[in-house]
Amino acid sequence: MQIEKYKLEAINGDQLVAHQQRLDVLASSVDNIEAILQKLIDFQIAIPSWALGTGGTRFGRFAGGGEPRSLEEKIEDVGLLHSLNASSGAISLHIPWDIPQNPKVIKTLAAQHGLSFDAVNSNTFQDQPDQQHSYKFGSLQHVDKRVRQQAIDHNIEVIKHGIELGSDSLTVWLSDGSAFPGQLNFRKAFQNILESLQEVYAALPHHWKMYVEYKAFEPNFYSMSVGDWGQSLIYANKLGNKAYTLVDLGHHLPNANIEQIVSLLLMEGKLGGFHFNDSKYGDDDLTVGSIKPYQLFLIFNELIEGMDARGMNHATDLGWMIDASHNIKDPLEDMLQSVEAIKIAYAQALLVDTKVLETARNNNDVVEAQEILQNAFRTDVRPLVAEARLRAGAALHPLRVYRQLKVRENLIGERGLKAIATGL
Ligand code: LRH
Ligand code: MN
Image (cartoon, rainbow, N blue to C red; front, side, top):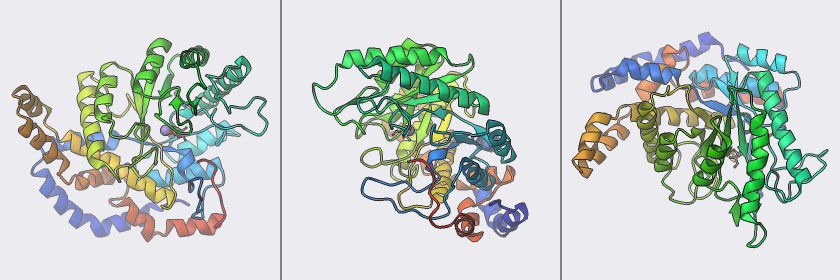
């Protein structure tokens, strides 16, 4: 399904006057509004190919209907999101869930929707039907060299798919670890993974990046072999300049200070990118900003401070990706809300006057420092985010257009209620 431009402009038309009034009010208190608008327009977030259908838990899965049945339909759905918010200009594939049978055709179709291919993701956390060796006891950490080689070969195959599609980064998330004390020699597991990743690293084209994604627990619940930012950083440092850490917001122990982790990884020049989502307990993969919007703002505050300190380009120098799973929400509505939450947090953080904040810090004026941050966080920047969309030819209110044009009903009409998407 495609969104006809005239229909989108007609719906925008009804909201323009109210929008302009809200924007004028906000503009009266924001100095560098044009610079902020351009940064918002340039800021694109990659949509995960594995989160366009209804996810599930071990207790149940409640399909919502109209789910994409192929990679082509997944690209159409991301194209639809992008036409609504002009902020979802890339898709991140997971192999083998989304193997491009004909890369040229897939690349052309994506380009027609204004999409590029972000990081490709390998999968050595599931056994495929035709697989020779099982990953039951791990993949790159495995005590058996043949299992490690199988996993290395898979990652190199994933790089090949990425090259054909014009991607320039590989994300490696390992479910490797142990379920019980005594099961694993931690040092040998680390060495096996490092040696294996070095073989994968050697297969990277010169301009590619490798993201090493860490996770504190699940599916292993005693130890994970890339269990936290420190372990991921050791791997990235030992592997070389193309290797970076990847921060999935849901992969931390309760109450971890993620904004401090982000600040230090940036300082080390080893922060590669993000998997945005939100969570209350574990790796809940909930809508971004739905549980801890202040934490998301604080993370963007550290990102801007750290990226500006290194002269980095906000839009292109880090991997901005969503990684979520939808048990009860419409996957596309969830994505629209997630992208909106990320843009709002970024816009609020761009309002922080870092010079005044530094002065307060140098005066140990803790109260003033908090006031500066919370003034920005308590500023309703939604007119700014909407204006950036409008200038990029998209919807003032994407979710409203999505519902007004009955997109899900149309997709169910096209694909049926029983259509099941590959992914989580
Ligand atoms: C692991 C993870 C990883 C993906 C998977 C779909 O929890 O975050 O990034 O491979 O989800
Ligand atoms: Mn992830």
